[in-house]
Length: 396
Ligand SMILES: *Cc1c(COP(=O)(O)O)cnc(C)c1O
View 1 (cartoon, rainbow, N blue to C red):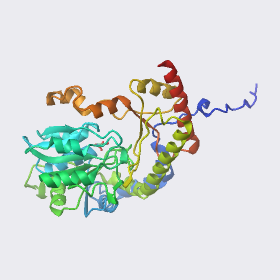
View 2 (cartoon, protein in one colour; view 1 turned 30 degrees about the vertical axis):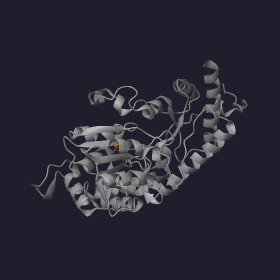
View 3 (cartoon, rainbow, N blue to C red; view 1 turned 30 degrees about the horizontal axis):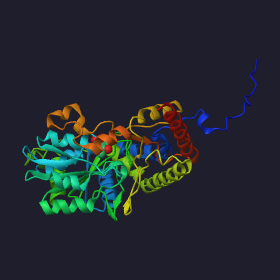
View 4 (cartoon, rainbow, N blue to C red; view 1 turned 90 degrees about the vertical axis):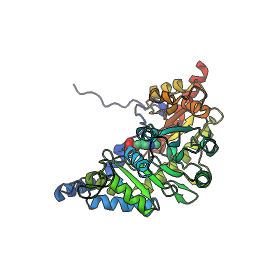
């Protein structure tokens, strides 16, 4: 028997629609480029140049242009970029490196791996970025570098941080993994410190089909040393001046990224438009007295890798569950400060030692912000959040 065509009326409340809004859907960005990407991959396969090929050079040139730097050096991941940056600056046991605790693990693990001391600095409440005053307070005669993170796609206060670094004669490394294309007063992320570090992990604003990373610098000696360190420390084949690591960007990843990098400007604009639309919709929903919304500080060009709200203490996890029930994807970046991680317990940071970091870890919730979100989806996220806030408040 034939079933009658369904002509049930669609529910008018968008929150009741069966479609979900994922936190991130990489396929929507990749799909329209898939023919071009497959051709590019085939080109690498046909050439047989799987490492150090022209695709890698081309991507290095593109990233150097985006980051306004003289040099860009491909490597295997953002984590390796951070490790190589510290190795190039000769960070060793007995040295101290100041860095935020409210960041991804790789920012600090590279310091630990070299036997240096991780010195955590607390963050600013509004931007989640490292607080220059806390950096200054943490400087000692053993400080060798400040490892800044441009968290969620917005640059840290680089003018103040660079002034501190100059005053104390220490190096600055930028972890720009979440911030390719971001700017601080017209200067690009990755161009302000001695070395910039970038990641092409698939969830970043420029994501590959696997792991990949890039280093940027304006200093020729650093560019040479970074390239050498990423190739086992070899200067001429099989002659090693220093002990490096094996960290290369695959030609296949570079070929994929060369197709995608042409879209990066458009994607950043779409992320910025989505953020602006959220701020408008949240203000309209009257939730901005209850939720704290993220902001773009004047003079910074925010590229919105994440759109991260704060939920009043103790209510975040409940709100997140409500959103999951409505099939709205969220994530907690990050549920713990790194100083609270088990593996860094030997550093001796007790509860309350970084109060703003600990408060943020209990309150943050990241909402979908990827470029291809439709306006209906943005509206659905805000309406869904309003509904969830209502239920969470009633339960509280
Ligand atoms: C993703 C990320 C990294 C590490 O990059 P990988 O390419 O995954 O190794 C480092 N720092 C921050 C802030 C990141 O978000």
